[in-house]
Each structure stands twice: as C-alpha cells, then as structure tokens.
Image 1 (cartoon, rainbow, N blue to C red):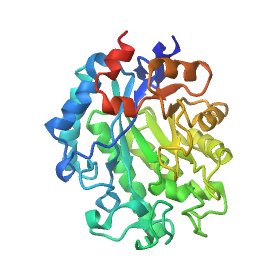
Image 2: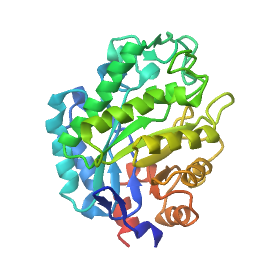
Image 3: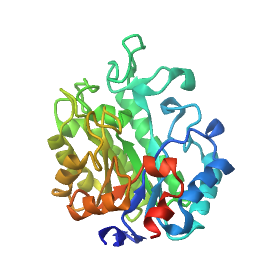
Image 4: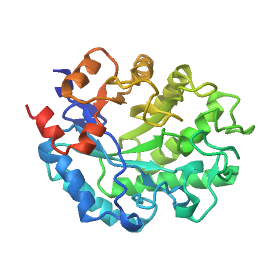
Length: 331
C-alpha cells in the first residue's frame, strides 16, 4: 500500500503518508496551551497511526491574530506550553509534529487585536463586506519586522520540540494576500506586476527561517496556490511559485486554497485541489501534500497511486472523529 510507505525529510522519517492538517480548535485562553488542547492532539496521535500532525495555525504577532482563542507562538513565554504539547504527541509513538505559524493580515479582527488590520494594499479582502474598514498598507520597514517575527516564531517551534515548521501562506491570510492579485495592488519590490515580486515576502521569510533553524530542520509551506476566482492566482502561478519555494529551501509543499480558503465551489470530491497538486508534483522534487474532501484511507490511497500528491491530509474527518486514525489506519 502506497500510504504505508515511509517518507524522509533530511534526518526525519515519517512512517506513513497520512497527515492530520492544521485545523483551528479555537481553544487557547490568552494564547496559551492548556491540558484540554494537549488531550485533543494526544488522542489523535494515539499509537502513532498518523505519519504527521501539523498543529493549528499560531499567531506570530498579536497584530495578526485571527481568533480570540488562537494559540500564540509570538512570545518566548509560549515555549513551555508548546513543549508540553509536543511531548504529549511524541509520547504516543512514531507520529511526528510540525508547527504552523501565521499572520492573518487584513482579515485579523481589530476587536481582537485592538489594532487596525494591515495588508499588502488598502483594499478589502474578497471575504470581507463593503462596510468593513480598509486595511492599512504595510510599509517595507514593517514587512522586514514581520520577516524577523516569522523567523523568531520558527525558532520557538524548534525550541519547543516540534519536528518541523510550516509557514501558512494559504486561506487568504497575510502571505497569501501578497501572492494574490486580488489583494496585492502594490508597485514596489513586493508588488503585483510579476510573480517574483508577489512571492518576494515569502522568499524572505524562508531565508530568514533557515538562518534561525539551520538547513537540516524540516520546513514546509502551506500554499494557497490558486484562488479559483476571476482575476486571482492561477495553477500556472502555483507551479512557478512552488519551484521558487523549493529552490529557496522549502522541504515540503502543502497545497490548499487561496482566497477561496480551504473549500472549492461546486467541488466535494476527494482531493478537490488535485489539479493544482498534480501540476506542482510534476515540477518540483520536494514532497507535496494534498488535502480536501478525503474521508477514507482508500480514497487517500487512490490519490497517492494516481500521482496527485506524495502525502494526503485528512482534515474534517479527523477533526470530527478522534478515532479515525485507529479505525482507518489500524486495520
């Protein structure tokens, strides 16, 4: 069975190709890990059935907080709780765990952050209402501060015992906003007129993280490569950007939606982003994860065998049923 084949990233070996992707629990009081969050992940890591768990997105700066009860990785004081979480997962067996780090950008809630939302340009996000306040455009100097904050967060993930780190650049959040023509209207080095400029921020983050964690620490990017909307990013864009990420030092590309978030209109079939993941697979040498609509291990196996991806994420099924890994993978 293809899903049972191990996969190696530098020194790290994943025992199989099934991934629990990041899904927000919205359960962290003041950003801190508590016992209930640890139990939630520990149950899903039980006996090491899963090859990899990527924990829910954590904010790198309060300005980019997406939810009142989102987990923080913005402070050195967060390391103790995060270390407790990784220990709980590792205690269960062979399942490895990556941290996902994020900044919500223009869709951060000012009520939560007590700051004006920021983004690449002062334009409304496609998911926002016309009545909402426009975000403030980030200056080049502010972008450099955020690059350093992504890197510092990655360093905290490593110090907390995570086996790797994933940059969140999908689902309409800040890095995705720079990549998408729908939200990036800039005319500087981070502008919208070339793909290289649209991913300049991403590449700086990748480089800065590598400077902190080293070249051998597994680094993934969750990439909202296609908006599936008129005027938005395309699958061709996704392929070219993925090639740039792999060259820059990313070890794993986790494919998902862009301004359409993690769903795709009129598509519910297993692997509904497979047109994008398959195209990326054919042009990069690093592994690719595909998530979306997968309910059974048989569906995951079919996607792997047909070359849609190298690993398969099972999201909602595991979110709703902690016994899914045992039932489907422990057969």
